[in-house]
Length: 363
Image 1 (cartoon, one colour):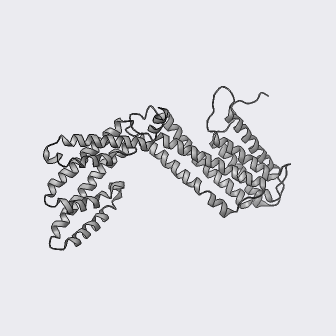
Image 2: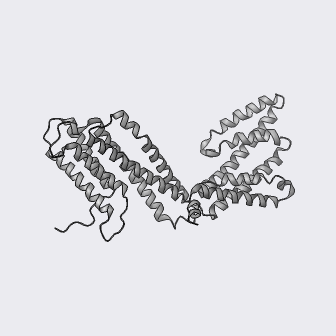
Image 3: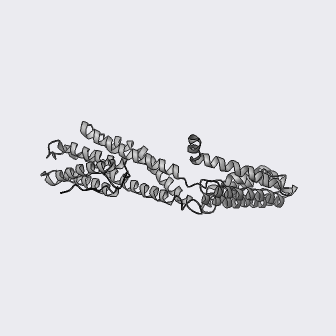
């Protein structure tokens, strides 16, 4: 049972169930129509599948945009067909397709449903020219019926909020950010810091994860529109939004500070003024920040937990780095400024992650 419930939380499984139910219902409803329409009942499931989208707002948008695109394609085909009756059919088809593709560039109206213009135009030319008006009513009307049922099913049957996908992508991004920090910290301790080109190439996976996280957050926001479940899950949706945007800001800061370490390598520029050397102090700070990135929430509000320990470690390491900068007496301006920027980025990252001491030790 647990496995079944877990699967039903997956967006693609929910969409499959909704699409199947909407297609079946639209077929049965279409069969109840007069014979002139029920004979073409198979158009209704097509509209249902078109309209079953990840969110209610997307379903409604897909439904009406698809119908508009189909009608525009039909009208285009009929007009061109009547005007070019004297030319070979091959030229007529070529002209219709070319004009349909031009019309499809009106993306502000058609969006993802733009390709229906050329599809409908060719369909009308091949099977509907004998009675264009009747064919348009059958096809567009039944497709609209199916689309309406698709939107209705999407609204009533576990209307999607896309929370599962968003939570997974936020967690994945969090893991990659922490690993990026730990990787450069380990490199500092081993003395084998990668070159700028190699380090930039390693960031591709993180960049993709950030893009997917932003997309998932935007999807959740769209899913909340006209969704009866939105109020029930508004806390989770708000948490996803806050985490996503905080990680986005932290990712920029982390990218800056790790790039500074890789490009300027301040730990090799005569800045050693503490026992373990600058490289180890910076490494400890990066590891401390990684620990906070991995633990976004507190387990309890009444006593210290793992996140409190991670925050304490990170703040102590950041403060040691600050002390190192303040105590430095060097003539290497470039190295000093790079280390200062790393220190500032460290503190700003911790502030963005709301890393602060909740239970101060008694004086």
